[in-house]
Length: 115
Image (tube, rainbow, N blue to C red; front, side):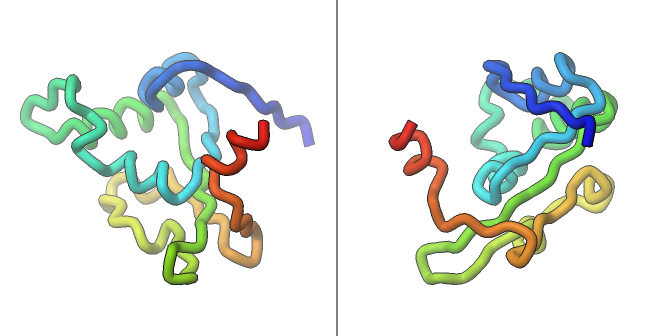
């Protein structure tokens, strides 16, 4: 397919997008939720916009987007991109992998323990 997988130690997607302009980031549901959570941007100066908006604006300017894989929650319900409130101006940056396209009931924490 001519695609590459790149690993980076850059801590935030703003940094990742600057290092890898035009990249598509494959993320899980929980990471997608955190992208829109202000508590993950404590040192980010927001100005007139929110820190989330400023960060996503930068990622968008760098031509990056996200593929979001869902997961089963503690009640056994599949959660995906449709369960995240994505502001309209950023919706074109996100694409969902449906449950029929991808489902793994193994948490990322469990995967890290195995490796």
